[in-house]
Image (cartoon, rainbow, N blue to C red; front, side):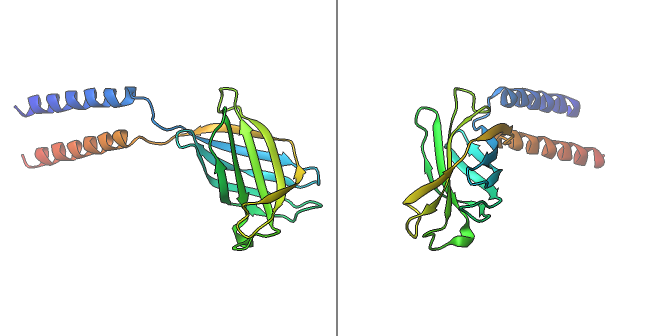
Length: 182
């Protein structure tokens, strides 16, 4: 009887596992690597995550080397994001150590678009400007630059897969416990 239960338990796990693994992932998160050289000699490099479902930018870390118009900065605080319009996305970022009053401080503006391939985006424009008010809701553009943006998928585990894995481990523990009492 015990072996029949073990076979049935294994069959249920196998069917459940195949049903979960066939289900496509709900969210695709892309990590973009960023590299831009501005007209004043400033170089910006770094990365950020882009969630294709929400569509929001997070985990921003872009540093600049400093140029004629702007000192070196580390941009990690996103101050605005624009929802996609015709496969075009944009955001603006500041260095949080400059705040809370960002007036006159550098702001990085990035806009990119895709032609159907999220992993091969094209930078529409990148500017490095200055905030015109304390909240940096108004800003001026000082230097522009061409650059590259390359993407790769970040694996996000599905909750169902993790739950099923946990159930499998509990089943193994229970089976081990049953055999140890005999």
